[in-house]
Length: 164
Image 1 (cartoon, rainbow, N blue to C red):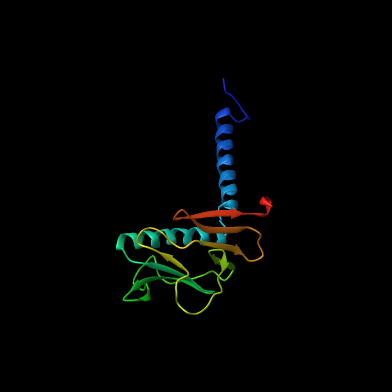
Image 2: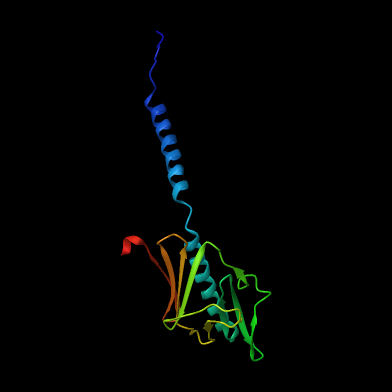
């Protein structure tokens, strides 16, 4: 007796459903997997500032960080003057994203960017550093990423329009 079946088996239907589910999950992840440039910049600077603080402690030397309108630079205090780090692969001079707005305050005083290469944030060998607040915002966006110092830690917070 020959079976002439025109229907799908339950196993075939389950396999198709699993494949469709996997494709939908990839599609959903690809739509939201791109973080904001402001978030990436804030996280990168947070990690670099932590690294500079650790470097100051390990080397027993004063470190500094300078932010200008176009770039940021790490410096070391040697031979009675500030010297930019040139041969350091991580703490090197970096350009900032032109699509981002940066606002730096030290001890609640806004910093006016200048061309003189002196640090605004200073990291001491004992682990202490300047009290600062750095806000990073994508132009034409309301979401603000803020780095700030608290108890010799660099913390990151996010302020979005929903928080108001």
